[in-house]
Amino acid sequence: MPNQNKPKPYEPAEPSLLAAEAPSALFPIASEATPASTLSEVRDEIGDCRRCKLCSTRKNIVFGTGNPHAALMFVGEAPGADEDAQGQPFVGRAGQLLTKMIEAMGLSRETVYIANIIKCRPPENRNPQPDEIAACSPFLLKQIEAIRPKVICALGTFSAQTLLETQQKISALRGKFHDYHGVKLLPTFHPAYLLRNPNEKKTVWEDLKKIMEELKKG
Ligand code: URA
Image (cartoon, rainbow, N blue to C red; front, side):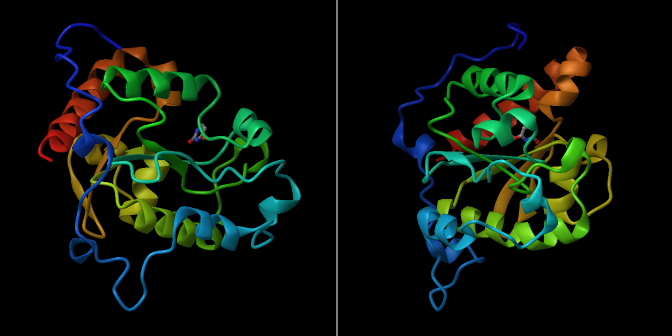
């Protein structure tokens, strides 16, 4: 990440930054009639998932990792080879860059939550297909309900377009807050794109600073 314009890291231990405090009334996905499941209940419901064809090629289901009460959640596309092997999201080269981005924000992988639109690796890292997204996305929604983050950062075109149900380009979507079921969602470029286009790191840093400002509002 570039050093210039790097604000003083604010206190990452401040509880309001680490755990979302939005009252459930402000979070319209779950209701009092159908309260949100906990993350472990969502994981149990997924089980040894056979709901789509990716189950026949995956090694591991990549559920997501981090703070179950995170104020900030990152959502990527799908596990790659490293993630499939380890069962953890964003642990390959793009993941190492994501970790640096999170740390530059004064946070850590343990204080945020990281997940993907789909939980099993598509063969040859092809794009996830509509039936796979349809089978898997209800579980991401349940994870978001359980975590109730203040801000979701959608990483890359696929995540942003899927969550916002739009075909607009990432260049048009990024850097602005959008509404996702009552949660502020800010798309930015995917770390894998940044590995190929390092000159865009400064753009992403501007986006991350907007998220930091939003989190500071408490
Ligand atoms: N790219 C993603 O979108 N997700 C991962 O978990 C790893 C790479």
